[in-house]
Image 1: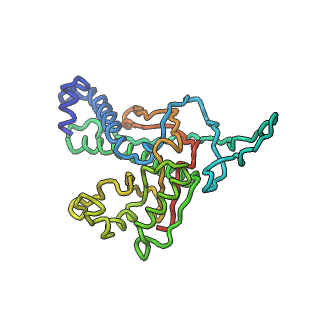
Image 2 (image 1 turned 120 degrees about the vertical axis):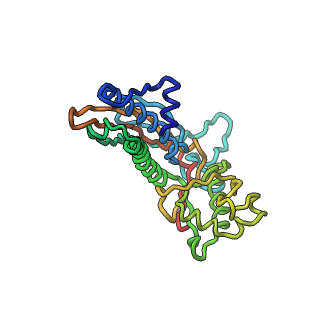
Image 3 (image 1 turned 90 degrees about the vertical axis):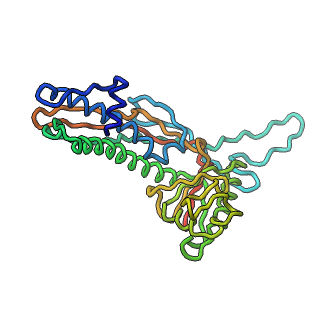
Length: 305
């Protein structure tokens, strides 16, 4: 806390008044700046699903976003396509035109908001531990919003994935994690028309099952000492491993980053302050966004692990 205050003071972001009767009017502004700083600082450390999408800025007046979603049928020989086999044309003939295999879909914009009140006595205190509580609440506000955004995005990713993979048994019992990873990445590569997956998102408990597999501890599979570091490195099967409790246990999501969908942000994170007289001050945070899945075949939903 003291380090943040010193940095902000030296950079001119905030100037702290001496505590006492004269300094009291400056304290709410001081807390507001610290809350803003803390909120922005912790926000990037709490989201795992959103960075997997492309991100664009939308208009704040939009309530829905209509987009074209590819809904082509899949066959191993042809990949995803809505086109039948090419015509063998006699001279002077033309091929039969066919549709592109798309359907209209819409992104639903959700506004996420959270607020908390600091009463007058807490706001005007000079005690460091109380001020640390205020900072902690701003951190929790950012995390609480991000938790719900993560959960929504992962749920929508699973329901929009064009490909699927089902494990034969759970990894914690008789399942074979290595076999499932090989088969799932192969299923994705075929379904995506030759594009390789570059991430897998799964529940921490399922990640723990992999760490217990001796093959991931073996130097033939990893150059790191996994037992000592607690991490699986380098990237097994060319995948970034994302652990998040927002992913339903026993399932996983595999895909190509930035290819399967878009997050449309119509209202970036904002923090507002409302004074309530002698009752205290309310601090609120809000953001609005929606998700679209234009190319769902770059996303695979797995189950049974």
